Each structure stands twice: as structure tokens, then as C-alpha cells.
Image (cartoon, rainbow, N blue to C red; front, side):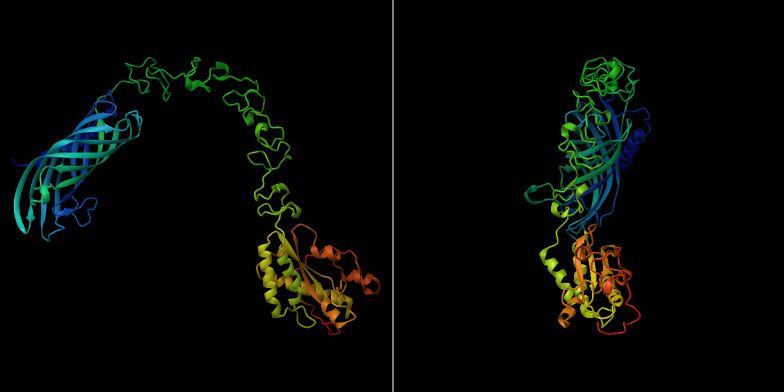
Length: 536
């Protein structure tokens, strides 16, 4: 008996066409128990010549086809008759030159275990995994070369066993897509014409991967499309999409006469005027929506009161007297992002922790204060000019690093001179030197709005100008950090910086604590004219 591949191909094609041409078919259910499938597939071989399981690299791809007819038995079980045909070619991985070509047909009886049985997944689930197994017949005409010798057509007609795992994707109420992988174990070793394996083990077996379309035959009448056939439906006019009981009637779990799809409180008896819901506290919010059903409250807060209007209901508000407009957390307390105990609305540095004594900002370390104090010793200028000497650069770079470390602080730069020479010239020179230091720090990427420079001239000596040592100490540039928004640190120490007009109004040109407008000094150039006496 010769295998007739044309017949098997025809059966497979017919199954596909039948599935496509069934416009009135529905998904397979107890009312529509018979289904037809058409599939395309791909075989993979494992035997004495080698294996291409899960790997078809280097192997000619041959696509086959098949079909199936299945019958609904119960929510968990179906029975199916399956057929498949493919021409398969394989070249040996064990002995060069060995190969075979097999025209393979398989006819199997399978029993399907469905996981969408109402216990694991709903029967109407869109994704429907299943398992199948059963016996069948393996039919093959094989020819090729084995052990270096050609062999002619060998006919094989042997029983087989198979196991299958699949998943069905319900595309619509009419069509489903099936994706399956099965292993077929024919009770023969002659497919590759190599046999006599150790322990008489039967090596020849196949994997079969298939994709196909499945449709069910027949149609149950269901005018209201509620999933309950008219012959079982006691409420045939149910609106589309409404959940129904097994009799096809809208669900009414609380038994108040209002169907669940119209009942806003389907688990509690209510009245029709409130769409099936009660309202114990009479605040116009039904109990189902009222988080405080025994206390009148606001509709926007689901029926709960909120005395401080911060959006957190009183019963959950741990800070009931929060000032108006302050952002709060879920407990109704002012936000404290950095967790330092100072609420954000009072915290000058809400993203960096610091003590309340420093307005919630990190305090300047003692070591940093020391670096700032000592920096004045290392800031030097060209004689009688506002031009920085290169020896000043490392110190100014260090100060720029401090500014990066303390982003919530502003730096005050105050220039001072000794008392030699003209008072106005000294004031200009001190201001230009402070501005020069500021300009260099701006070049180190310190933001301009975080550096303020002032010149105090000779008005704030820290030593006796009668001696050269005292004069040297008085010629200085001082650096002070202060929280941005606080008074300027230099002006806290010395008062406002003087102006030239103020110097002129002061007896002997020596102002003490006169007040002048606060000035943020930009980077300035040193005066073009030199003082008559060169001694700075």
C-alpha cells in the first residue's frame, strides 16, 4: 500500500476552507459541540542520524498541513481526530553523506484537557491553554542513504503515541487561533533506516509545531446576547453587557428589587430614589460612597468633614490645624521632604536636612569656617592694583568647591585696605579687589546670584595702621558664608559698606558706621588711574 500525499493535502486544505467559510459558526460550547480546524505545521526529527529539535539551522524548511475535528464532551474534556502530512528531509549529523526524505502522515485520536473549564479559567476566557494525548497511526514512505548505503522507498505503517501542549486564542465569537507543540513517538526505528540501537530503544520521534484556525459548527439562538440561550433564558430582553444569572436574568445580589446594573449599592438594600443606596447621615452622599456614613461631611471628600480644609478628612488628620494653603502628606501634616523635622513651608532648605536652629538648612562645618577664615591670608594682588596674583587661584578654587558643597548659601566678599593714601582711592581699590575675586569665582561656575562683593576701604581696620605689620593685616579680602536670604554677613559684622559721597561728608574722611545702600558688586576692573602715591 502506497501513501497518497495528494489525499492528505486535500483533507488539510478542505479543513482550512471549511473553517473560513463558516460565517454562522460560534466558539465551541455545550450548544455547539463540534469544531473543525485547519493547520500549517513544521516537523522536527530526533533519531540515530541526529536531531534538529528546537533548532532548524542548516535544515531545509518544509511546511506541512493538517486538519482536525473535535467534539465537546464536558467543560474539562474534548475528543479530537487529527491528521497531518509533511515531506521531511534530514541530513545526518553523525555520518557525512547519510540522509533521508520521508513523506510523513499521522492520524491520531486525542483527548484534550481544557484549563478554561470554569475551575481554573472561565470557559469564555480569551486565552485557553490545554493539554492533549492519545494513540494514533504513523504512516511514512522513506528513502535515502544510511551507513553509507542508499536505500529505496521504505513503507512504514506503525502505531504511535503523542502528547501535545497548546493554547487557543479566541479572536471572536466565531474564530479561534490555535498554537500547539506535540511530540510523536512512532513505534518504529526505521524512519531513518537505522536500527539495532542499544537496549532495543526506539529512537525515531518527532516534534510537530502547528498554527491553525478553529471554528465551531452550529448556532444557539440568543436574542439578547447574554450568553444564555433563549431556551434557558427567563429574561430574554436583558440589555447587552448586563451580568446575568444562570436563568438569564439581571443579577440582584441584595434582593432589593433593583438589578445590579442599575444598583449603585448592589450588596446593600436601598431605595430606588438613591439608586438602591442608603444615606444614614443625610449629607446627600450615599452610604456606599460615604467614608463617614454617620457624620455629615463634604461630597468632594466622600461625605467626611475637613475642619482645616487641607484635603485630609478629620478622622485621618494628625495635624488638624494646618495653616491654609500649606501642602500636606497623607496624614494631613505639613510636608517635610528632607525629614529634618522642619516642615517644608518653614524650611529654607526643604531638600537638604538641617536643624531648626538653622532654619532647616545644613550648618557650615567648623572645618569649612576655618578654611573661609584662613582664605584671606592667601589672596594677593599686584602692587596697588586689583589684579589677582596666580598664587590666589588655588584658594579661590577651594572656595568655589565650598560653594558647590553648600548650595543654599551665599558668599560675601569684603575688600579692605590700610589707611595710607586718599580715602576715596582706597575705597575704590578695595571694592575692585573684592570684585576681582568675585569675577574669578564666577569663572569657576559659581552662580552670580550667590556671590556679593563690597569694598570697605580703610574704614574697618583689624590692626593698628601706625605699624607696617598692622597695615599688612588691614590689607585683606574676607570671605563669609550666610544663608541665602539672610542679611549680608559682612554688613552684619561691619555695617553697610560706605560710599565715596559718604566719606566726603564725614569729618577727616573717616566714617565709622554710616549707612549706605546695599550693593551687589559685579566683576569690576581696577581703576584706570593709579593713586598719586604707590604704596598698596
